[in-house]
Length: 486
Image (cartoon, rainbow, N blue to C red):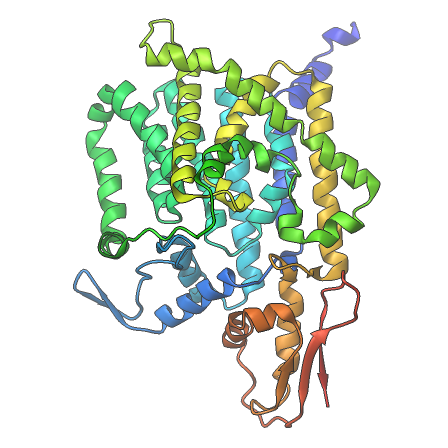
């Protein structure tokens, strides 16, 4: 029998180039997101969210005239634009606290869930767009997806929810399955309970649904109305607060024009660009030349997305003209383009362009554009692109492990090092003089306070000593926290 006709070889080829091996690779990446969860950051928002969850869980409340032994969070943290974020992240923390007070365990569970949703959404979107699932594998290797999956932060929840929203709606456009539409609506409602920057993507899907899918909207009106009604009822305290307390607070000295053009950098999460925003400038100074080259190679996603956006304009035009030639792919990319346009208007109005996290609710749109162009790319380009992202992500993980975090304002000492320091402090009396020489704790004392609440000191008598909290050495890289008693 010729080798080409061998049934074993045929099955192996299907496994490698079909769905088997890419699915296995995605499973490995999800497992990697859970590796060493204690290496995650613990700066300001994470402890504030958990601090609020601890307080609300210990406070009896009334919801819809029902007495409860706890109070569901009415809203989340106050944003930089003067608006409270939604309560979903606090709700998740409240649920976590019922089972464990260990934040490292919380990160492990959340990292697994977030990475799994990201992987499933990318795999599903690749299937809808009829491109190789290896593109989903390549994108999942992004250091940004890895970093955001390992944070007990509210904003980072936008990443998996937006991905699932677009993947589900694309599947509905392609297959007309009603459960896909219901899932898209649910994800949209949950996104609003995380961050209002998700309005751009939600508006794009909602506009397409109302104009192009009105019959489907009417056909499934009761189930869709039920989803909207239930989520709105559960979260009504948030909406009531928003309606009565909304005010615009734009930082002075900012530019609306930079906001209008900010969405052109939407492919950021598909690259290894701008990592110094989280890891600090020392990351740039100490990275190896190989990692620097890998970062530059990953930037290919920017021009690829820009070209794809240009090539998708005729598809948008066919949909706008209600052309009978418009196919399901045209409608998917019309939604993607509408999301970019709405994001530009929103960012310009809010003067938003300061950081990559403002792309967390729109990143999946640019992944769709990348898939659109990359389906014509040879396999080796996809391989090189994925390898560049993998190299940078591994380098970051190793650096964080070696340094117990990163001495930067947006990462700081790893959570495990902070927990060790708190446990060392708690070996001494609570009235011991405490001097802190760790900038992240002096700037954000809630990080220390919340860890003390999660890990209360022993009830036994403890000696009184002077306590100095400091970095282990003077190296600008080493973020180990040390505790010295005197």
